[in-house]
Length: 199
Image (cartoon, rainbow, N blue to C red; front, side, top):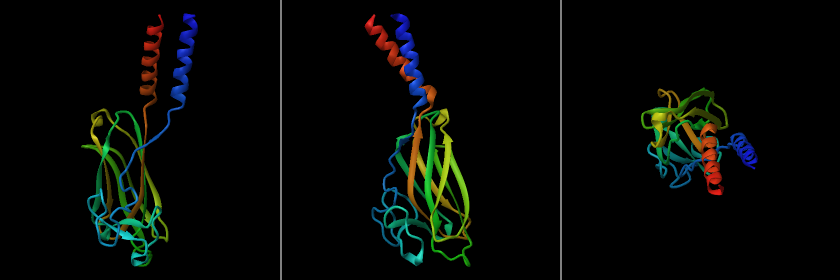
């Protein structure tokens, strides 16, 4: 009987380790719809301004009617989230980025950077340089949170380039995948407690 319990425990750990999945982290006003409108700041974000899809004939937003722009790319937008970093967890940040307006002649490319950090620790960062088109590109940054980031609030930062282009952002998505070893330890602890109660 005892051997059977051990076998069941090992099976449970294996199943959990193999089914670790990404959890969605809430990003308030992820599509810049709240307080959206030309030349106004979007709720929950610092910097930039939310603009309608038709401003200067730029491409439509990928989620809702608004996207957030950086004037001449020489700025940044930030938001600190309620969630804190989990050491060893893998974070994936995906953001739609596109031109302020579709003008390949005067603005041949869009350049910028998306970043996820926790205090002084940069967890994930991805610079980009894409040709201007009547579209928004999905830019993705992935990274693992270091031990020093544990318990520190997560901060999103999106920047422009050195001033040669104007950028817009939209549809911010953030997920976290717990470290498999951490999940396995939690399961082991739970099973051990269960076996102790049944002795």
